[in-house]
Image (cartoon, rainbow, N blue to C red; front, side, top):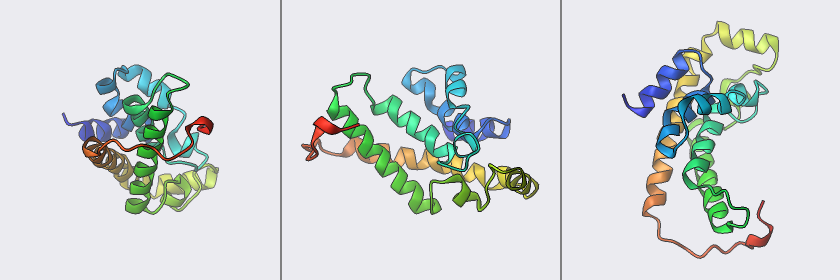
Length: 163
């Protein structure tokens, strides 16, 4: 089963978009699926159904962290590299879908009972959200492919203040 199909199937089972995306790639980076599903459980619906950053986006950003991040506080090179990849991913997702925010992507506020009910009745979670799940993984792959072929460049930012 492809990772994209795994994500689509996970989402179709009732898991959130963030859970579907992160769990599709987690084991490749040393994180077991149960832990990935648990970690990502609060990011669906634009972070706890607040309409913020789409869960497919936050799930992909978690994968970027697993792939490129560091557990060393002073590893500014890894931090900057990870931030650059995240910015590139976000730009690609915005270019493809027009936004990274759930409210804007769905055109309604699923953080309200009326908005959630409207999205559910219109079948948005079955018809629209799977595109974001699949798209997040496709964009992630494109960004990582470009990154793999990029020559190391001296970062021009002041790494002492990076957060």
